[in-house]
Length: 96
Image 1 (cartoon, rainbow, N blue to C red):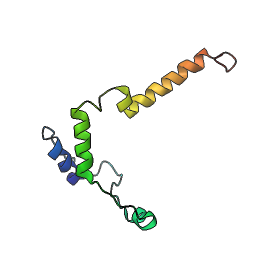
Image 2 (spheres, rainbow, N blue to C red):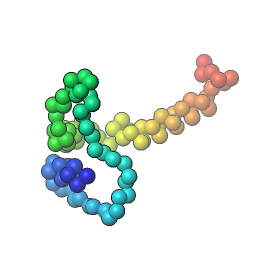
Image 3 (cartoon, one colour):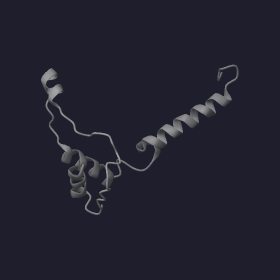
Image 4 (cartoon, helix red, strand yellow):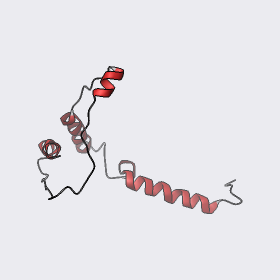
């Protein structure tokens, strides 16, 4: 995971990397594209650095902002709350 952190740091030099002791996150992010290549003859064109560079450019040009559309958790919270409000307006299960 430190390799990914260093790629991010290359594109965001103002960031600091903090390595925590122990394996707090048990998820495994090792990815192999062998299966998709073998089954579909799909080859990747971009690498991790390309992806981080794309994200950095989007942040710098305000394509990605901190609004609800770009924050998945807050967007889902918004959808849940909106659904609750709509449900409270229904009469006999219908809005109209």
